[in-house]
Length: 257
Ligand SMILES: C[S@@+](CC[C@H](N)C(=O)[O-])C[C@H]1O[C@@H](n2cnc3c(N)ncnc32)[C@H](O)[C@@H]1O
Image (tube, rainbow, N blue to C red; front, side, top):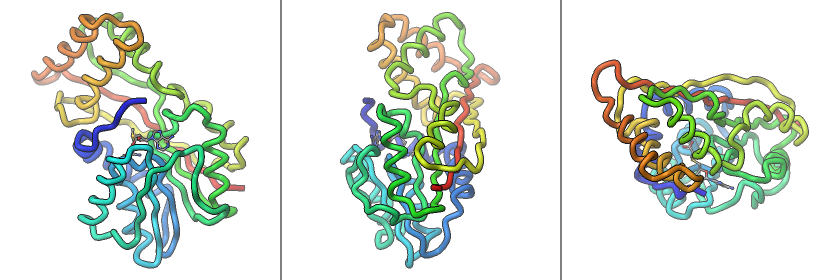
């Protein structure tokens, strides 16, 4: 699996389109003061810290992630954000939550299930830890929804097809309604959330994934020179009107039956 760099995540996930995605995720979850929640694959803890402010001092938000350095960065963010006392960050796996049955009001899983091979087990775990009626928000991407202006579309498609092979679930969103139902959830709503970048900026979401995309494509059969040419083309698009990127995230809100 990709190793996530806390500093790069801090820059990319602090950018306006991703902050807007979190605002919509929080609006869907509608956390109330005093509630207890979990953020699966919390990364550097953006969403968990924001949710902790919503549940307040009487509530609690736990964030789990596979990466120890991410968990450390999330704890640091909680300290800086003044929510240290109402958050817990620890290393943990989406498919094996060390949390009591029926103990939570809400669970969030944002851009994490695409990395999880046993998705049925991960969704059953989310259902297990929720109270009846508890809410689950899942945000995930289908990379078929990606539009990226490039000088060579055939090359671009080879790169993207190779890159998505690294994901355990590259096309999860269209399958989620059925998977959620099977795991014991009632689907409440689905929204598309576009991430749109109209300028090349290395700290934007798309600017931040160019190098890692090129690198991963070479792992799955693309020649290094072709991947480098694809990346150089995108990074050279600095003049007005020369850069365009968009991908859809899909936000699912479900309730445990
Ligand atoms: C794309 S990042 C998203 C981070 C965060 N949810 C956000 O949106 O800011 C994916 C995160 O999921 C974590 N992750 C991947 N597989 C996981 C698993 N099986 N259990 C828990 N976390 C996982 C990664 O370490 C990484 O931090």
